[in-house]
Length: 112
Length: 111
Image (cartoon, rainbow over all chains, first blue to last red; front, side):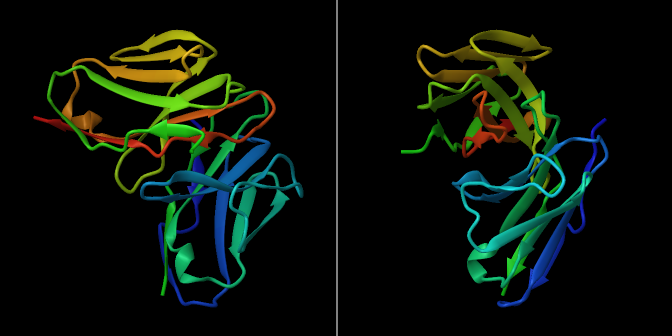
């Protein structure tokens, strides 16, 4: 079974803090994704990566950056957290020959 | 207008009912269609995957794709309280690795 883990289930941060969200997958998948999920808006793609050190912007990259130094690990960085970044953050991975993605349990981030 | 439209619900049905969940989309390039189930405070899990048009059945679940109408459906037979969750449709075209999601339909199956 594919396993995608995220470093925290719940996080509370202050406005202006730098926040790191970590994601690790154990299936040797090339592709990894970061989404945020908000009520009524569904999942929106922030960034994705199709190889180590490669990244592409998704639909809502503003205020975020990412890092992929190793194949199994994909980090999402909030450079200066703001209250409108309070959300559920979901990481996913997939192999390049399949469109199906496998998700982690999510991190609920509250920015005060 | 969103690329993928999905009624948010909630949809409440009695146990044993047949459930129909639907999505419409506007991008004719979409070729791959998925349904994910998401329990409260959990990540989405893949339920069904379909390529192009047609039907696919897996146990109590049937996925249908009608590309001519840009309409996909998920049917759940003999629904159970454990089916209570949010159901997300997702789709992609051949040139984009990322998925486009509907906003999800919340389903409640009453015992």
